[in-house]
Amino acid sequence: MDSKLVQATRQWTLVQPVVSAYVGAIVRDFAMRDDVLQEVAVAVLESYDRFDPSKSFQSWALGIARNQIRAYLRDRSRDRLTFDEKVIANLADAFDQEASSVQPKLENLQDCLAKLDVKARQILELRYGKDLKPSAIASQLELVPNTVAKALQRIRDLLRKCIDRQAFGENWS
Amino acid sequence: MNDRTQEILHRYLDDQLSDVEFDEFQDILKEKPEFLSEFVKAAMLHDRLRGHFVAKSSLDQEESTRRDESNVQPKFVSSWHRNRSWINALIGGGIAVIAMISFTFWRGDDRKALGVQAELVRVIEASASQAIRAYRIDVERNEIGAARRHRDPNDNRPLKPPMDGAVLYVRGNDEFVLKRKTVDGKDFVLGCDGVQSWAVRPDGPVRASADLSRFNRDVPGHEFSMPLINIGEALTQLKEAFELNLMPNEYDENSSSDRQVRRLLVAVKKRGFPGPRRVEIEYFAESGELAQLRFVEMPYGPDRLTLRMTLIEAPSLPSNIFSHSAYHDTSRRVEIE
View 1 (cartoon, chains in turn orange, brown):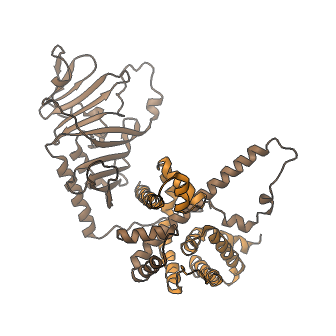
View 2: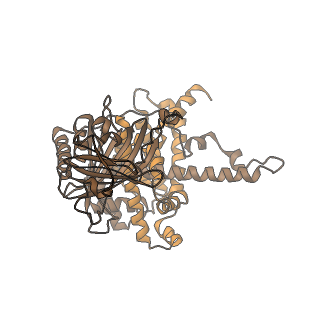
């Protein structure tokens, strides 16, 4: 790989988690998110020559992601449950501003996942590993869909609190 | 963020919203900037969870493939591996952390700091209550120090009875009983009735002293004035040597009685001060009474303990619970030190 591509790859690797989360916040289907993210990665690397190094690479990459999302949504105009342009733009700004404080905390996720009970990890495995929605998870586990939905909310809240606590400890010790 | 907005956010992440609910969600995103921030945090966790479980699933699959293919000749390389482009490599889950980004905590303004201190004071005052409370002590982790790993075989001093599974009874800040079991399963009890401190070993004389801290040396936290047996004193030390942070309210979903709101104070040790790396104080919001104390990496002689003290129901107790006479028969000799 030439040096410019190496540099682009390095920078993209650093911002990819933020861009991925931004795309995922709008494109809810995981498989579709992967497709859009791949298009964003290609666009970032192919247009790297046009990146102004005096500006934020993350902001620039999020701008490209916004364009790719717009193209994706245009192709799926029949899907009514999509954000309008203003929200998509506001979200890009919000991710750009918040990511640097959130991302380091997420490094504690693995430790926090280990603290969950077996049932909670099973539900997460089905939701995130197998890409099942609450009603499908409920069928598998012989539960009511609303119970699964509430459980997912509770588990995510627990993880958020654990991650925050761990982050407080690491910052000062 | 209220319960309704919380719920709607999580239902969005799981693709559960109706048309009407989606419009409501979008309106909230437009009208409330603080909600945007919460959405970003939730979305980043949501995405990271996806990455974690996909990577885990890939690893499990590869491990399984390796096991299946290990005895197959010639070596088979799956088409998935052959066709994997470097672009897919970038996108795949489990991106390694390149660098830790250091970040500055928002310390809050003076009013917030005062509020946190006030909560700590409330907990300290509640600990001085004259009701008898009981706590179970669990040792989560014990990092055994080098001095104990390489103990002199000629050293005949008895090892300290383990703290794991100990029960502590307290009343106010002067009276306590700490009950432990030796490795032989015999009772080893320390205590103080506010007039005399004492120690009742499985055998030998009962030892007592007018020095109320005479037997504290055996108790974690003693070395830096945070003995577990005096919760008020332990918590008071947090004011100077620790950074305090108050976490949001949470409900005790496991409580068998009415749902009591709990709060969590996290105290992180400042550099240059002795003591545990972190102290977590979980207490009942209304009364300030302690529900659980957790000490992370507390020095205990050569070891470092992570231990938890949890409020438990105290059974009906004898009136002389804090006196050594409740723990031995009258034939035992009592030595005053």
